Image: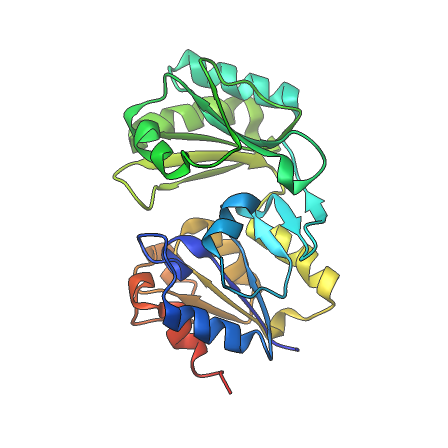
Length: 275
């Protein structure tokens, strides 16, 4: 298994309705018989497991924008947290601008203890997003979200210009102590601002994954669509942007698919490798 294939999920491997076609599943699972196959996603462990039912993974999962690396036995290989004190300060700055975040964190030392804290007074974008998670058992509703002891990420949603104001306020205080992702929200007409540990990104996680597996980046092929995929595009020998990818990512890609995520772009690329 010298070759390794790592894909982003949303708007890359997943279709827009969050499904995976039988063609994609069958192609991926056939590849998993011969190659190392894994994911690198902004999703939590619990949500990734739900979405990937019937899909075989034989590489550790890169989760939460690279904040978490989990092996096939659900053991945490690496986790990068925002401290409670820093998280409290982030949230206070946001509240001063009338922003209330989602907080994704761990309650304990295992991936099964993930929690998703959301505000009762969230804005319309947040309210529109929540129905996708309503059946999850890790939701925690509160009037005023607080930082936890182990925070993976703090996420705001809103209009781009409003989040730029929040970004400026946060960056003025924390500078390079945090990782900031300001990007379009893939499923609705708004932006999100994600705050993470300064070393929490897909590139850092891929380096840890590579050390864990003992491979070489010349053997990597990665797939993506958005700005949080840039780091792993720069590391991998082959980087594949789906047709619906952001232009900035396409500029870094070594191959641009003619297919979108809704047209099974990843599977069409992998079809050339299946035996």
